[in-house]
Length: 259
Length: 279
Image (cartoon, rainbow over the protein chains, first blue to last red):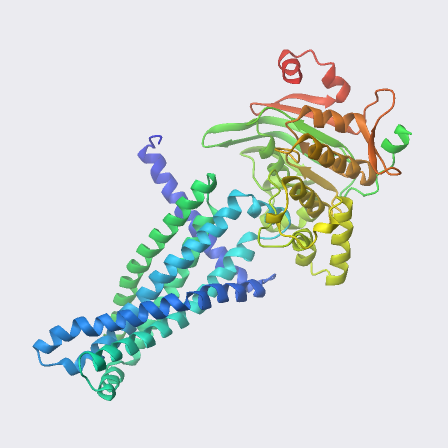
C-alpha cells in the first residue's frame, strides 16, 4: 500500500465529507422536484421495511427478555422487582429499541445498499444510467433514503412493542410477576418526552444508514474487491455514526424535555 | 454501387447546425496525478464514423466518457452538437444525452431488468406509451437480430448477445451520435464480426455519427473497407479495394494523439511507432 502524506490524507478526508454532504443534499432535495420515482420508493419500503421485520422482531423480543432477566437481579436487591416493567419500557423506548433497530437495519440495509450500488458502479451501470439521461441520485439514492426514514420509524415502534412483550413474558413466566402490574408499570413509566425521544432517533439513524450506504456504494472503486471494501466501510461507519448521533440526540432531548 | 451506399445523404438531421458534431480542443485530464489525456484536439464531422485505436491504458475510454459528459476535463473544451459539455450542469447534460447513444465496454445492462426493460429504459423514462415502447423495442431487437431474447434477463445472455442488447438500447431513441466503447472487446472473432456488421449497418443505413473504440485492428479495417448491403442484409467488401470515406481514424498513445486522418493516410503513415503498432 503506497504511503500517503498527511496533507493528501487530510485533503482526501475533507473531499469525502464534501462529497457525502453534496450527495445527502441532492438526495433530500430531489423529492421536491420531478421526476419522482414512487415505484422505486415503494419497492425499497418493501425491501427495507418488510424485509427487516423478522430480524427486528427477534432482536427486539430477546432484548426485552434479557433486559427483564438481568434487571431483576439488581431490582430484587432493593425489593423493587415490581419495577421491572418500568425499567424495560423506559430502556426499550428511549434507548435500546431505536439503537438496536438502527444497528440491525444498518447491518442489513447499509450493507445491501453499498454492495448493490457498488456492483452497479463497477459494472458501469451507474454511468449507463447517466448516459441514458437518468440522474442516479434521484433514481437510486432518494428512494432508499425516504423509504428507510419512513420504515425505520415503524420498525422502531415494532421493536419497542415486542421488546416490552418479551420483558413481560420473562417477568411472568420466570420472575413470577403479575402481567397486569407489569404492563401497568410500563405504561405509567413512559411520558410524552420518552416517546418523542425514542421516535426522533430512528429518523437520524435512517438518514445515516441510507446516505452512508449509498455514498460508499456510489463511490466504489476497484472491482469486486472494492465492493467488499465499500460494504464493510458502510456498515462500520453507519454503526458508529448511529451510536454517536444517539448520544447527541439523547443529550439534546434531555436538554429540551428535562428527562 | 459502393458510392451509392456510402454517399447517401444523412437521414438524421444534426441538431445545432452543419458544423462538426464533436469537438475536442486542448483537452487534458489526470487521475491521481497521472495524466490520462494530454492536450487532445480533434473533431468529428456529421455522418462520420471515427475509429479510435491505441494500446490499453491510452485514455480511449476516458475520451469517450468525456464526449458524453460522464467525466469533466481538467482543462480544455469539449463541444457536442454545438454545446459545451465540459462546463454544462448535469441536469442540462441529461437533456443533451437524449441525442447520444452509448454502448459500454462490458455492456452495462441493468441486471435486475429484462432485455425488454433494458432496451426500453429510455422510453419508460420519457413515459412513452407501453404499446409504442414495446413495438420500438421489438424493432430495435430485430435490428440486432435478437428479438427472441426479449423476455430474458442479462444473466441468461452470452457476451455477444449482451453487446447486441446494449446496441439495441443505444439506438432505440434514434440518437444523432453513438459512442461505442470497445463493442467487440473480449468476444470471439465470429461474434466480433457480427457486432461490427451491426455498427456498419447503423453507419450505412442510418448514417449516424459515431465514435468507436476498438483494440482489434481487424475490426477497424473491416469497418473501413466494407459496406452494408441492405438488399442482402449482409456486409460486403467495397469494390476495387475501396474504403468508406466517412470512416476515419484517431490513434492514441499514452494520452496523446499520434494519428488523426483517413484510412489511406493511416496505412501510408511512415511514423515508426504507428507502423509497429499496425504490423
